[in-house]
Length: 441
Ligand code: UDX
Image (tube, rainbow, N blue to C red; front, side, top):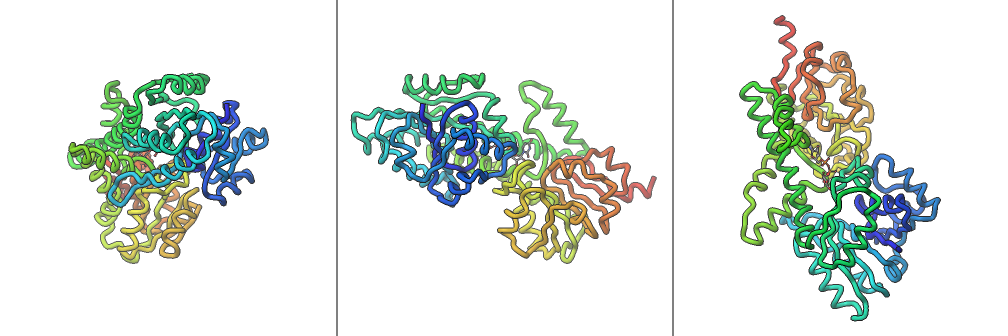
């Protein structure tokens, strides 16, 4: 079977390379010739653990091909995965421009029967529109099947998620196409669900909205814990043991970011509004998350007073560990607020410094070394729970900082470890630990 994947972004590239790993030959097409040139040269265009090696191997094995030529990609292929971006429009709806361009190119170049599978996250009903567009543009003798096949890949563990996902959703009214996809995915040993197209599209939005809801819920509970003197880590542990609730996505912090949750929650709110059912719960989830992004700076001001002229080490810039992705990262809000406060910021991240630098230029300083960030700092804000930060010896905060004050937005340290140090430590949903407490003992 000849497979084409449209888009060399996160989902497209991971899908292409993982399908190659399953033994298929895959052509990955993109309209960006620079990306294609870089990939042809064996250099990944995204940061994802393990991906660079798999890219090199599959290029060497001649299973993986990159092109910008739609004729090469579409004319003789059997199966096309569309994995182009569906970014956010200013009003929160999904922008389907890239998707429409891809469908147009496909319709203009296919020469044989083909299955088109949409991996991009699209509003409910979009695959039906794709089907209409294809029908209008292609000769009647061609049989084109449309399938919604949402992805559930997490950045940082995407390869693992591809091979060991919790489920594979195949949404289509076309039984033959469903059977082809079932056969393709059978070696993965993952439960395959066949649904109607609209339900598959909805599953993706509902999954992300539910996970975002869990995060905002636990962040609200954390805020209340701070007021009533409870400890959010113990509370999350206690509720998570109830199988009906489940323990994942209950980590309180400064909110979710990334390329999916913020965009998809807003798109679902828009979708609900369009069908005259305002999604009030999800609107509140988004509101709570926006507030969480400002939390670390609010706590910093409360603890340190005026921030102007203060040297602040911002530890962690990526929206989560093991990625260089800063899209919708809380660090962006934090940096904007700190710059407005005229603070003197030095930002650390093991992977995302260049991306942040392209936005903030010389408004702040940058480092890939935690020690350098902490040197003479008045306070440190932790925005991403990188292992490098979790494992960083607490004694170094005492030794390097002018005043060892940590605002930990990701609860990286246990309170019992903190208590052994002369540090003022303010985290999320747990009692603050003041350095002066040591003096009182
Ligand atoms: C998410 C979905 O998990 C994935 O299925 C979908 O395909 C794309 O969106 P991703 O954005 O890579 O994946 O990251 P994820 O690990 O889900 O984390 C999202 C955000 O939530 C991060 O900012 C993370 O810090 C935050 N988060 C996650 C929490 O604040 N608390 C948690 O308990 C879990």
